[in-house]
Amino acid sequence: WPHRHRRRGARPRRADHDRTATDSNKTVCFDDIDLQKGNITLGSNTIYIVDSGDFEIGAQAHVTCDGCTIVLTNSDSGSSPTIGNLKIDAGAEVDMKAPQTGPTDGILFYQDRRASSGPSQNNIVNGNSDSLMEGAFYFPTRNLQINGDAALKFACAQFVARTVDFAGNGSITNTCSGYGDDVILGDHVRLIA
Image (tube, rainbow, N blue to C red; front, side):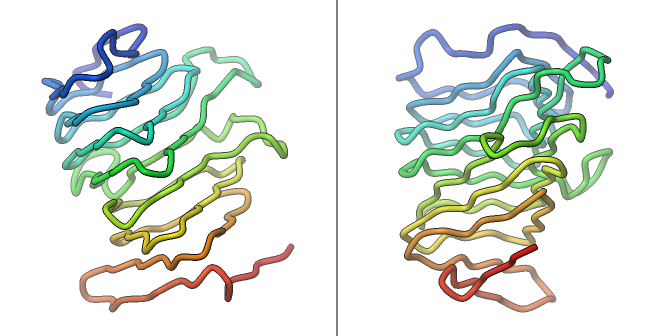
C-alpha cells in the first residue's frame, strides 16, 4: 500500500467535536476506528487499514468521505488472527463513497478473508434515510446485516458476504448510473441456503 502511515488507537479523545482528517491520498493504519459523535470528514482517496479492531459509527455521528476504503484486517500473519467488524448505528448519517481509481477502485468496505466465521460474527449497517453509501461491501467469511426502518440509499452497491440479511420495515434503494434504479423491499427478499 502506498504512503503507509501507522497510527495506533484511533479513538478520538474528544469525540463530541467536529473533525476533518488530513490523510488525503495515502494509506493510514489504526488499531480501531470509533466515531461516536459530531461531523467527521475522512480523507479523500485514502485507504484506512483497521488492524484487529472494529470500524464503528455511532448514532450521533455524521461521517463523510469522498473516495475512501475501510480495510478490516490484522497484521499478524497467522491463520486465525483477530479481525474486527463494521458497525453502523441507527441514527448515524453516513455519506461515504468508494474511490474511483487505484488499488481499491469501487470498494468501500473490505474485510480480510481470514476473518473467522460464526453466528456472532456480524457486520451491521443500521441506516437511515439521510445516509448514502457508494461502493462494494466485501465480507466473504462473515455475515452482513442491513437493518432499517427508513429508506436506506446505496449507489452502485454490491454485497459480498457469507450471508446477507435485510431486516426492518423500510426499503433499500440502490441507484447506479446507466443501470437503472432498483428498490429492494426487505419483506420480499428471502435467500435460504
